Image (cartoon, rainbow, N blue to C red; front, side, top):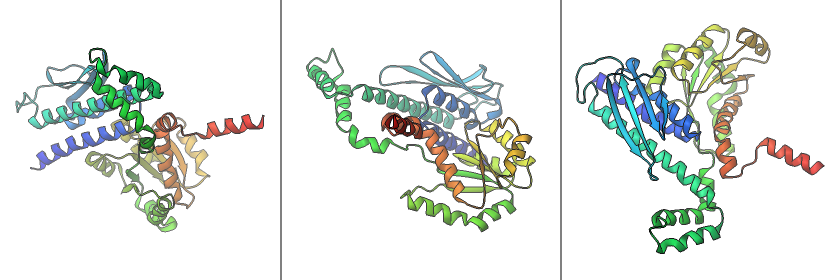
Length: 341
């Protein structure tokens, strides 16, 4: 029963991680590559499992991919007849089960994954269609062809027309699509106590969100070593890993390297105690190859709110500037400069 629950948890984690990856609204190439990367961990023997997603003649593969003797495949098709498939390979022979060495639940999982990917690709295509239909007269011209089903698909044109009419209303629902919901904080017990004691961490974070009328405050899970971090990462999806570096400068960097190797798609932010440690930290770790961003803790727990907003803005900037015409700081500076001239 324990083994069965563990397998179901792995499958659920895979679906949740896929949903989070799609919400980040990156390019199709990046999205499919990240999904292919996480797929092997959901199967029974992840250390001997590789995966490939094929779509429109391109392959998106997991690390160390090569074709094995045992394969589980599921094809999918988009609304505009573009075809693709998900393939999962075992690289060695395992005992016979429901479908060769594969479980029937793994067949259900790969079917669900193909449906999720197909829906994602359909939504991307629908967004392109919406952006192209920017003029009302173009929509009216296309609607005039409803009498000629051989020339245009009337169902798709009607969907396009309705989407156009509701675009102004719905655009605000499509902004800030990605939200940080789960944070893994890796810190020694002393450092974690200092954060809570000095900065009233939970109370301050809640206050920051309340002031901005934000209701979806992320959940923070604290661990003190790599083993606990991996246990948490295997149990559910985390949007960000924060490493609190106190007196011990070596262990957190070892943790970051191992976590980045196992979960390359999860951002890792480092939090130093004070400004004086920045230069020495960069001298010790000149490349910062396993770290996505460096922050400094100076007794003010609002730094955690800044870290969350930094990641959300980084992920959402392309979507919000294109879809909602939201201005970035660079745009505002250019506007002010032009006005001054």
